Image (cartoon, rainbow, N blue to C red; front, side, top):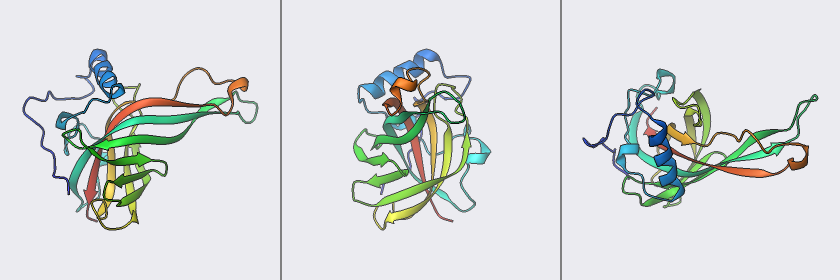
Length: 196
């Protein structure tokens, strides 16, 4: 089982007012190169997380993993005379522990699967805009075991926070490109909770 990750003293505080464009670009560049993101990006408790995304009473943080990958969008025909637009299809990401070691994968469903084969499927309970408009929203999801036991077997809720990138494209979707898919790079902290 992964341990709860503590925030190292050398990590600078992160919040909406502290995130610069240069810092965000550096994180995206690191994610694009597959560089490991450490515990600075994977802490379990954060005052920046809105109240609506807090887990239920009695739930406790079990571990945090970093997701690095893409959010996949598809250009779909508009309805009622509307122009074609990008629609979210699924995430596709690797899960990494605080040392940057592979810990599992995240995909359509959405699901999270640990290396031991345990797997959970989530359903969005609440969402909040990310502090940066160029990042996908922060989420709270309830989960159910799809492959019981193992590392993820007792997980009941997941938070997606500290997102970078992943928003839908703003161009390239027209009548001639309907059906085309485009992956958009992102990263996020996934906090796993156990309990009621």
